[in-house]
Image (cartoon, rainbow, N blue to C red; front, top):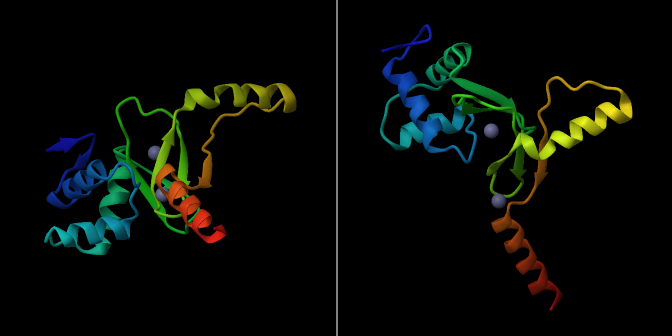
Length: 144
Ligand SMILES: [Zn+2]
Ligand SMILES: [Zn+2]
């Protein structure tokens, strides 16, 4: 199987499958590696790194830096649009924010600073709904 100049070896296909199954998390190479191990699939960490590089070069995956020291990867969807990430500091879940939500922000930046934004990627750190709820419960429990 040949996709846009990249040979889809069983290892690369596995990496793609794991990324597809864990869209919520935007996996690191280490996470892909340990998930593959959990499934009993033999794949070396170096192979995961190499596969990710090859897949990224072929335009099938996108890497991003969410500020936690390791690159995270997601599948590049057909018609992949720029989007922004909400990163939960508690559970590590990564939510995607639709670009359309922030369109007016780029416009405001252009108007206010005369700055034409070309490439934007915003990371917002905080707590997802479930973790925020849990934190509030603990806080309430403490203050009672
Ligand atoms: Zn969370
Ligand atoms: Zn994303």
